[in-house]
Figure 1 (cartoon, rainbow, N blue to C red):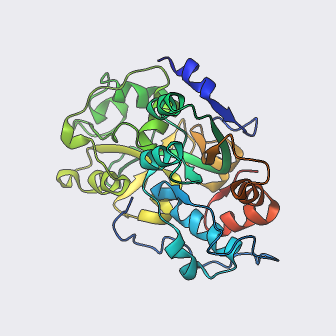
Figure 2: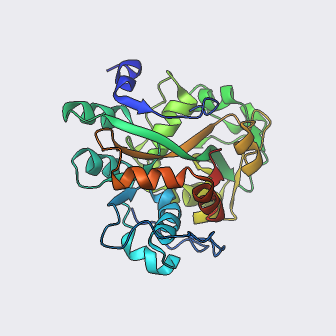
Figure 3: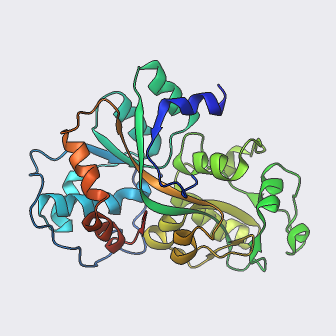
Amino acid sequence: MKRQLSRILVLLTCVAALSVACTPKTPSVDPTPELPLPPSPTAIFSPQTYPRVDGSTATIPLSEAVAAVLMGLAVEEARPYVLHNKTHEAYVNLINGLTDIIFVTSPSEEELLLAQQKGIVLEVVPIVSEGFVFLASSDNPVEGLSVEQIRRIYTGEIINWSEVGGADVPIVAYQRPVNSGSQTGFLDLVMKDLVPMTPPKERVLAMMGELIDAVAAYDNAPDALGYSYYYFVTDMWGNDQVKLLEVDGVYPDKATISSGLYPFRTAYYAVIRSNETEDAPVRKMLEWILSDEGQDAVEAAGYVKVR
């Protein structure tokens, strides 16, 4: 089904300028930075009334921060109430009514089709800004690529690092599985209508962290190229053997992502079923996340405010 037709399923509440993944290995840093969260004047929920939340790997710290403030708990006390099953499973759970709200990347074509088949309309609301980043071995002399070069690498037209200013070695281009948050972002944000080459099975990695480590350690040579989301690479996983690449001359950091200067700007979204009533708990949660207090809380957890 064409992407344009599938998108009709989505009710997208989005900032106009915004253009628009479950258990990782133990991160090298605490997944929830020990930064003070702004105090909530009153807890909106108790543990008994807290909505069922699911989501991506990269939004676990966000979910912990929200749960802590909205239940009036310390972050470590809120963690038992946070269960994320990765992006695709979270969408399936939401569509099947097994969870109430999910914190994820944008839906894939298959997820949109599943929603349509179930008669569900998804309401997709951006809650924090994010950057889709490309990474290489820290020993790779290439500091950046253009959007066009990235597309030509992943369609198989550019196969050697020497073609983009690097050493005379083949490019080992990793991908993620279909329906993972990273792969959906890669197709939507980067490839657009282009079809990426089909990689060998050993170059399709199920976990985001696996991809980062593979880029870092591939044959102990600076051959590999991969992609992920800025927050996961910099705040959750951490591997000093990889580096982020500039894209069109712009290095991805919080400032360039927030301003939109970095070309692959996206978001993490709160997704609910559109038939939720106006006074539903998930709508109260969503309203709080988008408030000044909520945005301060997610920023304190290391994310980039959506506004």
